[in-house]
Length: 336
Image 1 (spheres, rainbow, N blue to C red):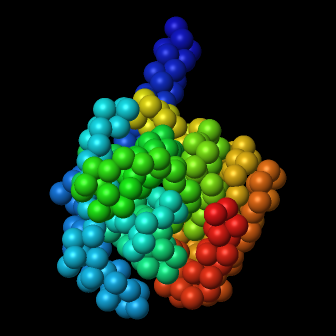
Image 2: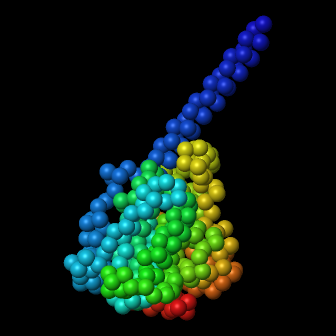
Image 3: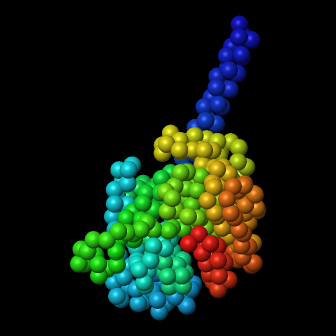
């Protein structure tokens, strides 16, 4: 009888310990998921904040930025995405009527105005139309969490369709007069930085319209799992197992996607259209070591690589803007 009682106590203790561990893992997973993906609208930086930051980081574009805003060249559009949420983007026409168009995708906790330096590259230096969306849960778009570029791929494909609808039309004067004429589709590049680059790579593995000609990814990660694992180790000194597994499962339950499925590198493997890969060799936030596996994963279609010497995360354009512009222009122009 005494042994049975001891055994029961042992089983109860073991079960209690399992319950405590499970509760602890749930609490830690809930914390990590909120820490990583929760981004309330009241915490989002304003458009003015990002415009001023762009001016400070890239002072050569101040005159252009002041001009396009003073002359009301930057326009807003709101659309309802197929998933039902209201999304926002800004856009501006090229100085001269053209079918050449760039869809420029921002990074983690940024917004459309935080990509005005890349808009400058395309609009001012290359004469492109530009559309800059606010991804789900960013800027003026609705959304209750960050999707890390995974489910965002469907929205960016929709934004490319909207860009085609906007920019394939006639010049401003012809639109005002409502003149009719045969119009051509746009010729598009999708260019993203950081999470925007991860979004761009995720898009590249899906079927995209013929007018999407090529992609530029700047410091994107191989997968959401890899990126969060790297940050878990760097910021908290923790191994991936078991917290990544439980947090990924919680993300699946709460938001309908998991870290494990968000494999940008697998999307690159499927991609067939040209892609330019850019990364700063001093990037620790999205580790530089991710660049070459991504580059090697692309086996179909034209590709090129630009390593920004000495650049930390998302600063390749700031540090090397003339070389960056030349390389992007050369790569993209082959698709015109």
